Image 1 (tube, rainbow, N blue to C red):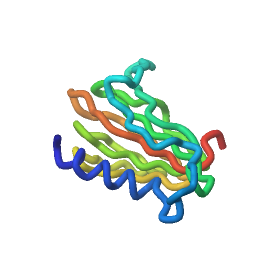
Image 2: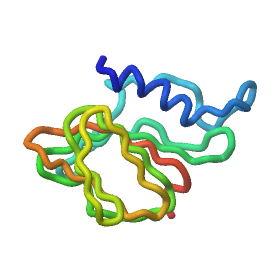
Image 3: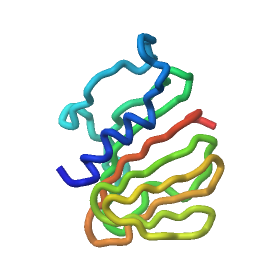
Image 4: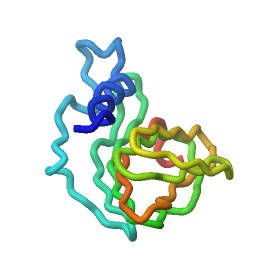
Length: 141
């Protein structure tokens, strides 16, 4: 397991856990999501694995998916939405554009797109890029 993998687990736990959740049933159940059990979907140049999607203790909607993006491609055009997103780069390099400014980010980097900021992802390299996307907030707004 690389360093990102060692740090991603505790970071995700902190991001979605509430100190007040002890003894209170969350909408999303506590469970292990085995990677080999996650169905893969292909959409153009992207292989996508949905991991979790639902509401946690304080009513925040979260969703997490893993993506494998082909070389020299993007999953979709730059866009805006109400929810916020964090992108954890596991392998490769991504070019992350926020409000028209592009920056390259390599393995171990974490990218953040705030609510309503236009953002997009592009794989500028000749190898696949793998990353996780954690979305926080209303998904369809």
